[in-house]
Length: 574
Picture 1 (cartoon, rainbow, N blue to C red):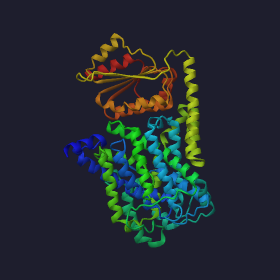
Picture 2 (picture 1 turned 90 degrees about the vertical axis):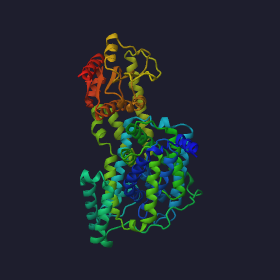
Picture 3 (picture 1 turned 135 degrees about the vertical axis):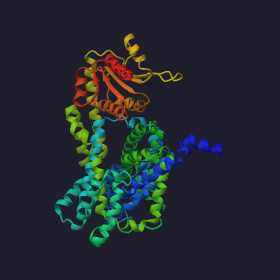
């Protein structure tokens, strides 16, 4: 039995020594997930759809945790996946499928798309495509996520005002303009919800997340003051999870396309959250295994009428900060939601749809990349145009095509920029070589990491003497050659190492060209070091590289590597 437990631990990453932390993390994540799952279900499927969001949170959360490749990740319905499902329903309705009620005629078709999407994700993992999915320029990711945020905001305006709307952005806007008849009671519920979500004191929300706080306060108040005057979730199917056979023989082309969209967006959403989890927990996820776990979860969710899901950033961060470290925390999160599903269905029927819309307004605003939205033009006009173009295509055209076109254009711009850098006299090999120099068998030593395009890693005698004088407390991270978005992942992968040293020096003396995504990775690395009480320097920036870092507000820039080592030595000796 003991050997079996050890075997299980090795395979799935379980560690019962962290049982208390995993239980607390899973419980806390479930508290946050409950109102979000209901809100996403209602946003994706419309009236009567909230419960299917909860089904998805239970199924995807449990299976993705069990089989996934990011130990502390919590999965469930997310903004991008919900927006995509809403688009699938709009496409099916345009093809003549009735969407008057749930489960009705349309739900089995949607669930067929969810199952196919899950199978595509499993295939992505088996083909080991995980490493490529995260190699997307930041300008494209930012524009796409901001576009998703805008879609969520637009789709929630109707429920927020008590106006019945359906379909995508354009159809929703047309309905709002042609039938603008707000419901005063719904607006009252919305105002109460938004006030709690945005203004609740931090000392309260640290213990009780604002979405759940709004759910617990506004629902009984709406019953007392408004009764049946405000639209509510409505009847919920009894008996909890149940097997539902999807319909495969109708609208197959549309269903396959929708499944592919769900698979790609779910993969991007999950793996970006995995990178966040790595950074916080100082671990490294397995991208391909994560795709397989998410795919199995979504396949099962489709068979059990659950909304598709992905790695959920906010729930994952809360889980880790509450003590969750292993897949057990994600499974506990799902089991807690299952208990709620079985025992509180009657209470959930009373939740106002305007309340869920208010919660999603906060989610939509949080998804929009406000920081990059307002800074992109300062870095590069071309980058800003790519980002805004992807945003507009995401909102008004097609999610997948927005990403594909954005990646294509961004790659063309990167190739052009790299060609210019090479023509300016760069003498370097065209292969990306990663070398790590460290003495793993000896006591702690200063660490040098080089991400470079040539083989010369030597320090001068004076620089080596300064590094030796730091007593093993300096991480010298040397970047060499033109750095595009492909190199950014190499930078991000090493962020967790910062916490083992007191000083970080990023040496970019031999970097002739710095892409936007790599710039953001450097900024994040500096911020990560400083947030953990470390000293950080960026050494050797020259010309356009220095100008770009300065425009972006990166701190700690010094003229040379020697100056940075001297400053580090002085700081450590005082």
